[in-house]
Image 1 (cartoon, rainbow, N blue to C red):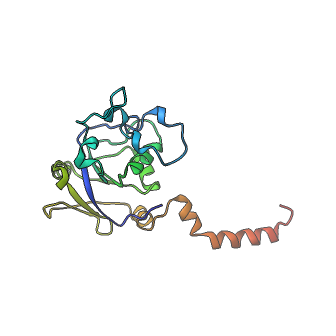
Image 2 (cartoon, one colour):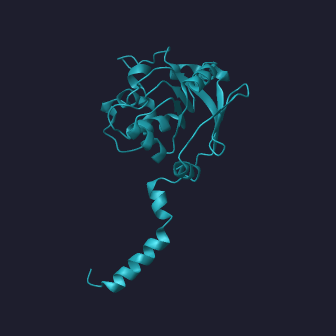
Image 3 (tube, rainbow, N blue to C red):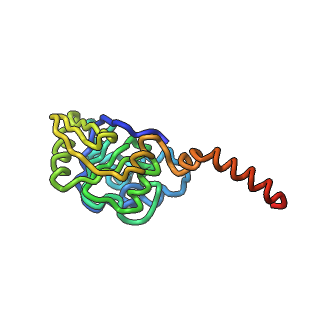
Length: 201
């Protein structure tokens, strides 16, 4: 998993509440177990017409936001059914950080497991960041995980809280498998001793 330390990138404003996982990645794209290739289908029903043509008014189709790495979104982001494909699609598009006032629990947890930083801020701070994100090509934010702060284009700062363990995992690029592999020497030692003590197993 890619480490998350400091991210400076374009922030796209998605000022819609209750964005659910089916809106993030519709059910017809859940057949794959690969984590790549889903970015083109991110927000599919909002990004494209039924004929597959881009809708120019959707934020991620606008030239200034095509390479956005940060998403500033409305309340209750990631609600609805549980699907890990939702963070996969965001990550494959290039989104490394989502900022909102609240997230659905399962989506929130899945973000950390896939190298995406979900940040919870107050409604007042979200309004400031949404204003920053609406600047188009000038909508650049810096997310500093070590300092737990977001810096805007005019020097404004917003701080955020994060669980220390999750912070450690993101900053070191550790998913569940990575955490397990950190204990590889201990596991190997246990397996060796166990095999010697129980040779019939």
